[in-house]
Image 1 (tube, helix red, strand yellow):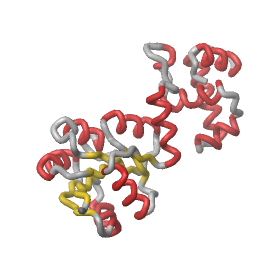
Image 2 (tube, rainbow, N blue to C red):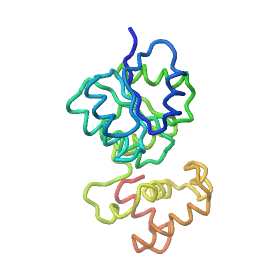
Image 3 (cartoon, rainbow, N blue to C red):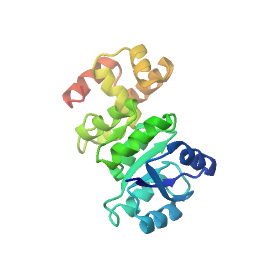
Length: 211
């Protein structure tokens, strides 16, 4: 039996590309290019899986999930985005998405991701899975910690890597940013936490079990 699929993206050309690439095994029951139409369309069609763009005018995929999930608990949501930012991944998953893949995914892998989400699995592009594990295991945050809460998601990642003993060059490679960008983030963390060097940061992070 075909998986009933609803497509949401604010680029019509991209929608047509996805539609043509998926092939057999999927029944496209609706499409939308904005949040309001997506909410209305998913409620009316009750698809098995809704494939959602994360960034769209009006709140994006997260707004769609938050509006629909309670009314249509049987619908599975899979985010498909150009963004691989931790805040987008974590925010979308917290809203109720069962998976998050980037638009660089191959048609074959996308089809497999949709089938796995439909089957109840959680599916993520390989380099995004760590964001989710960290967020839901508490690895990036301690409860009600005003000092930690003032840091951005990226700065918390940097802090955790410092605590684990990574060099700036190693952090840059792991986070896919330049060493200079790492230095900028470290400087921001030091300034916000009012510390003078990375050794103090390491002790501070270890005390909060961020290692």
